[in-house]
Length: 143
Image (tube, rainbow, N blue to C red; front, top):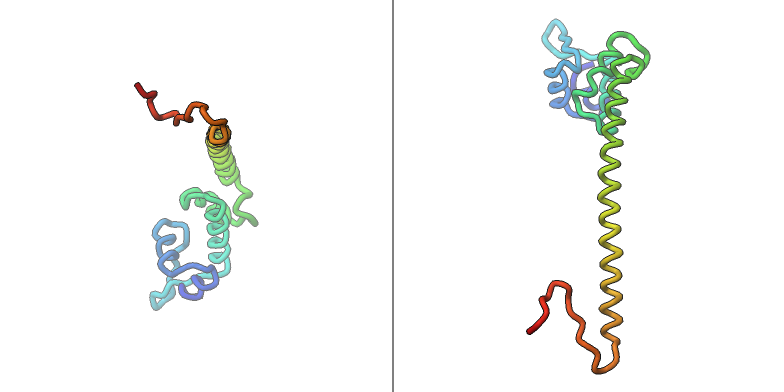
């Protein structure tokens, strides 16, 4: 199949396919008249790349999976190098989740403090006559 058909079937653009070709992720086969030529295996490579990209893998991280498929394996993740990439990605995700959990905890703490301060302000607003005026924490005490 020609580049336009492959792009359409893979749900991408011809520009993307040329870029993948320049990176060596997609083979650069040409017909006698100079047209790029692709087959179902190339479509399979692109589907593997797209799946991994959807999972958050960088383009270069897809290389071991592509090479695994090219070497004749039935799945791109059946080679040791692909498994290593999965392991690294999981470690990266675990670190990200830990950072986000810490941020979430900090935001939760801020929310509790803000709710407490608001409740105190509301209680002070309903204070009996003659009670001291509530002060904002950021306002310095008067003379």
